[in-house]
Image (cartoon, rainbow, N blue to C red; front, side, top):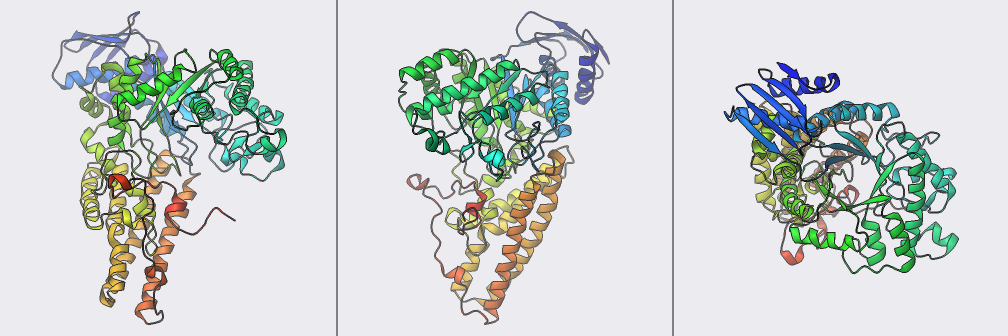
Amino acid sequence: MVINGITDELNKRVKSCVEYLRLTDCQLQFEKSCDLGFRIVGDNGIYTIFYEKEYMIFRALTHLKTQLKKGQKKLNIKQEPAYQELGYMLDASRNAVITPRASKRLIQLLALMGYSNFQLYMEDTYELRDEAYFGYFRGRYTIDELKDIEIETESYGMSFIPCIQTLAHLSAYVKWSIHDIQIKRDVDDILLIGNQEVYTLIDKMFETLSHLKTRCVNIGMDEAHLVGLGRYLNEHGYQNRSLLMCQHLERVLDIADKYGFKCSMWSDMFFQLLTASKNYDGDLTIDEDTRVYLDKLKTRVELIYWDYYQTTEENYAQKFEKHRQITSENIAFAGGVWKWIGYTPDNEFSLKIAPCAHQACLRYQVKHVSVTGWGDNGGECSAFSVLPSLQAWAEYQYTNGLENFAQHFETIHGLAVERFLTLDLANLTPSNPRETSGINPGRYILYQDVLCPLLDKHIDHEKDAKHFEESAKTLSTIAQQGTEWSYLFDTQAKLCQILAIKARVSHDIRASYHAKDIQALREHIEQLRYLHQLLREFRSIYSYQWLHENKVFGLDTIDIRLGGLQARIERAIERIELYIAGKLIQIDELEVAILPYNDFYKDRGYVATTANQWHLIATASTIYTT
């Protein structure tokens, strides 16, 4: 292996990737170029890679290896990026805080795909001076850990961008009944605009980030739906909330300027306040005072239009047009790779929407694109489960299509993409029409109670159970290949084993009970005991997955959820045994008729539905109320 033309530091990363890709029999020369993108030129094991930016070298290595695997030895290939920046933002705030070690592996994979930046979404999961409750027992990053992640990112020529919150989404912090925290709270998870202590807190946020080299930051400010309507309303009366947002943004930007940061922010709150809509819909009505503020601020902050739902280019385009009414400056875009609906990803839907969003970005000449990997309601899904969706975005970035998608994926990740995509199976049930986002039977079937199954109307008991049985076998077979990703398939295989029972056991117990079939009820007890055992095994397998990727904090929530499910199975066994023994006249839970959980898709005739809040799936009783 001969590598020439790059710095010693970059050489280390290139050498490790050359070894990883098994390109060690090649002689490689690297030359900086003024042309856009990268070019690979050479023949018979001797190649020169011309690159515009250092991070492009790593995608060039992937493409070189892929071409050589095809038998192509004489090469003269050029690729140009469609956007100036393509980044991946990983949620580190919904309990799953990725470790620096795991983040380094993810960064390497992103580099080999061709990403230019890595972003971490941190609500309270980073340390602040003199703020002990900020990230308390939440796995918050130390400054040294963040610097370590940034150094790793920069070693590939990529940039690191922290994504924080400076208005809302701070529930894990403001929940503490501490006076010095509560005086900063407006309502729900929203900070109190105008309160000096709030700006002292925000100053500390930037102080922590100032220890990094990066001077780019996403300041959040999304989904502050009730801003100005809590303590602020009591103290100041009703105020123009659009103007309030602008005033707060100006103060945050002033603090950012103090530390030399250039800011971006999510754009949705301006639309909600100016249109009374949460979905970028409705006609914008901008009063003169707000317009003056917007004109003053638009050059100081980049607005990010985020959207993970549209299935046509035109729908995205309509929303880009609405953004132009707020600012004529360039708008950034954030799409999504669906890993926030339970333990199982939805690469299928992510791959469906990606080309639509990409084409709209091209039409509106978007320069900065991010792909978000959220972790709503517990961060249960693996950070690595959406690699196919991330790969697809990289392919659109460099080739405007998926011609080499499968080959590049296998080159980088060591597994055929069609096999990797089987990680989606727990949600791809016969009851799921697979036409829209967020339908997640793999989560609600797992968490619903055995005797009080709130979502039983949203399951095709026989067909879904058979699907899970077959999926478990498929996933187990792939797990046995012994790849780096086997642990992901182990988790999903065991989950599907559980779901194969849970998809019909509640229904069958009810049928046997109402038929007064005692022998069948005895058999159901044995099913429940086996289910209990499978859950114990799942907890063990899933714990390995969690700790392989994340800090231990947050795993307690999984223990509570799965442990609670096990306890409820024990209760179900006890109740059925008492009934069989004649010690219960009836099982009250089984006397209640099952109702639909929601009517989201009633007009479309769907069986499966969307249910993503654990405390609303697991019980009809109240958990969070007094």
